[in-house]
Length: 163
Image (cartoon, rainbow, N blue to C red; front, side):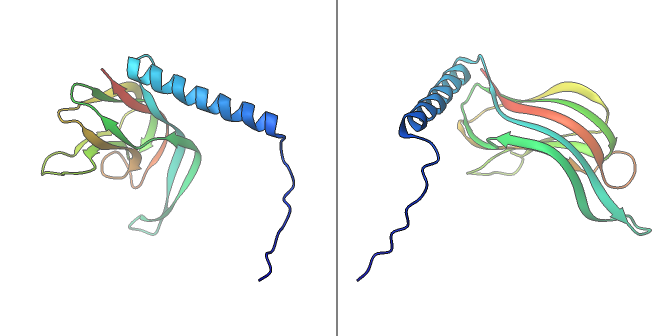
């Protein structure tokens, strides 16, 4: 049986790859230590401009125009005694900035907490953690509340937990 061997070009030398690997590992360890100590509580970040694409007399939403970026963890382990924090700075023209927190496992009625912000502002929304577990944090645009059909907003949001 013949073995196909394709030589791949070397993108970086092994010394540089080692330095990059050590740097990324050190950064993750420093972040974990800062998070555990409560110095840097943030596990996610979003900087977005979002606008629904509406058509017709009933203002049917057929899509979304979205620019910006979001990264981090939306599912994370939180411990009893912590407070989940969503810090936001929003310019809301239509719709609302919808923030949700719920446990990923062992769901019960009423364990989904949400907040819908319809006005411009810079604030923090907090949710106390009553049971240790994996929780989901969601920050999105919504048409549930607010003026006009659909949504149109710019926002920056950070989420995490404080002790």
